[in-house]
Image (cartoon, rainbow, N blue to C red; front, side):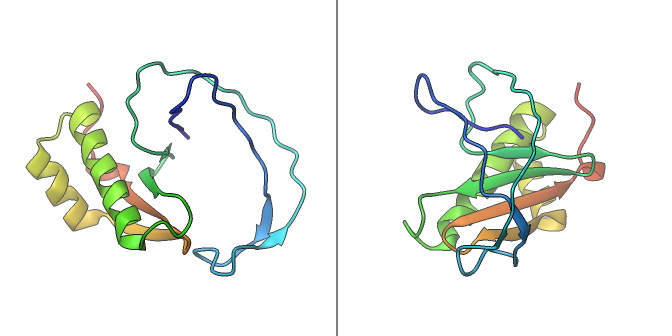
Length: 131
């Protein structure tokens, strides 16, 4: 996961573990559970991210996050899409038109929270290898 930092000295908080939760967290909660987590953090200076990104073995995922209920999910979808275009163009050297076409053909949107967060997933098998 790659998280943007918008303020000097920003801190990382990990919490709110869920054992089970419906897609989109529609009631604002899930079945809460404790977590025992071990992780490391690398600092990527000047990454110029617009929002959170996730890369798995199968997917590139751009997360369009906004303050809860600031506006409709349309804005979160727009944020995720714009960030994915930037990612595909800047890091994978796709032309902007090709990035848009790729999203149109194989992109999958998921509601992360009904309060204002969407994710856009692109299967990595359709993305050129990094140069």
